[in-house]
Length: 218
Image 1: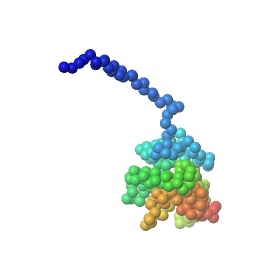
Image 2 (image 1 turned 180 degrees about the vertical axis):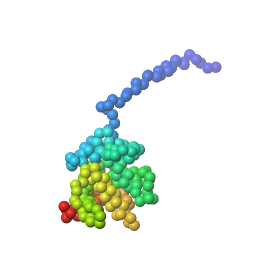
Image 3 (image 1 turned 90 degrees about the vertical axis):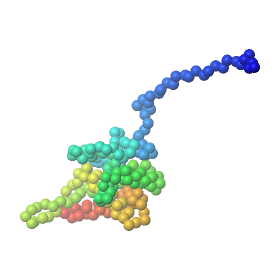
Image 4 (image 1 turned 45 degrees about the horizontal axis):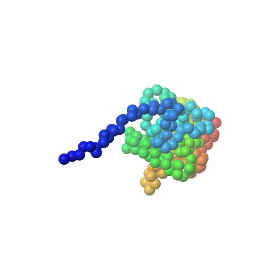
């Protein structure tokens, strides 16, 4: 026989309703590249390039992969985030065409290496490298009918940014070819040297050469 007299009524716990908290704009999560690098304190020291180096405000992204149609219209690629533009310039030389995930992995590793070597925000180092690597003057061919001479011309800010990205990626690609160092390490070295204005950088050497030639053609 079971004695039911000692059994007391056990109260079942009542579920309290969970109140959902929605994030307001003020408490929104800060946008960080790869969840690590902030865009807030980035400064573009060259006033002429501010409009063409997209690294602040709406151009801050979590990953350099916005899938935007930047080639559809002239000057539209100026609004492409600058780190994404760097990743796109790495997808060159035939066998690398279209491999954007590979390019993004290289860029992510490069940012880590830059931070370890300089202890700065790597996005700021990239911006400084682009400012220092773009030639300010170039020479063009003038004349026709067999009489050709070179004339020095000023370079537009947009072309300076484009040319700087091209020189930095080309320097890193050539440095890593048939070399034990990975392309991420070579790209980090190239960017750090360019940001310091060092002549060890391929981009700085080429920029000085272009400006020297155009100076002699004034």
